[in-house]
Length: 485
Image (cartoon, rainbow, N blue to C red):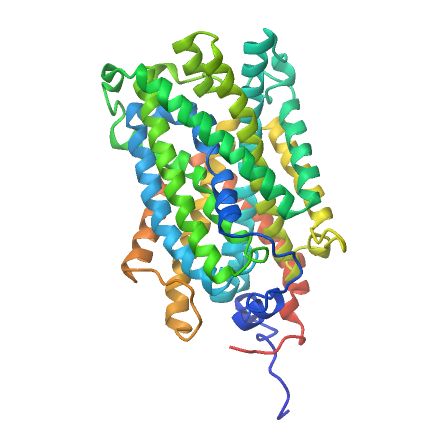
């Protein structure tokens, strides 16, 4: 009928799963340019950078060194360099998309606007895996540092049965469940309050990590670096794939697109500072750690950094301070990763991809309280019963898939919508996005086959949900949206 508005995408056939959400609609419904939106805009560059740093520093350094060093030896430093290069390339791509489509949902939303609904849903599933499992992984590590602190201060620790998951000598990881509950309560109060607490924990963690570097370098022994790469390039690559989940903070920054002031400027700046701060800290701590302790001693060592200081100084105050810092900083990491997952689900709920309960906002606090309760329950169960190394590899897989999609999205959007307003453009286009894609695919190829199996099971469950629920309930399946490309 002439004069009627066209619907968003074809309603049947291949067009149903490949329908794309108009970018103008995304920006309009989230108030990207008007300063409005459903969520309260209260975050500036400093707070947003701290959210990125908070969800990153702590994951890789406080707990994953003890899993990665046995794979690469002292060359774990190169593993962090490889992961950092990949993260930096991808950060440039994130900055362009975040400044073009500054909304909640991160790579899920970017895929919805560039590649179609089915691919966006798969990316959303990867993000949910990435955030949920990452939060669970660091919550597991929190129990280790809590026990180290209790042992140093009181000479008493929680019994293994109540402080470790099955498969690692325990029955239930109670400290991990308590931690997730505390984060849940704080997140329900609001993004600004959570960001303030997170900023405090970031300052504490950076201070204690610098303390670790200072003390560890006084005991630096070059003999500990020999042999530097006992397992060769394969070991370096395997460790790099494992530690890559420690760069999840970049995606967390972009999930806050609807809660930041002046998002087209704020998001790229926060991404830049996040990568610079995180990479510097990781390299310093990794080098100090492997220089102060033989690499063979990392395997099976709980609360690794605190244990290293304890070996160097006895049960003196540096080890106690570091254990306390680990307790505080891992709280911040768990807080921000749960925050990221709730915002992904918030965006998917708005699009009809998941039940509307995930998009429900408290009228006074303007936060998704029910969403937060459900996510925290899921994360708490995982943290209580699943071993750490399994969680770390699954998180890396989800992160790398999401990062690959972001890099591809930059190329697609440059070709299909060169007219869009961009607050930032990737330098060296198209070489930088291509290098980012290649680096991510390479790290994915280094993950163990068991990770592929668990990832395939997860995707199978996600696709079942999409074809039984999401494809019929997608808001783009209705005629309420007009094309505005």
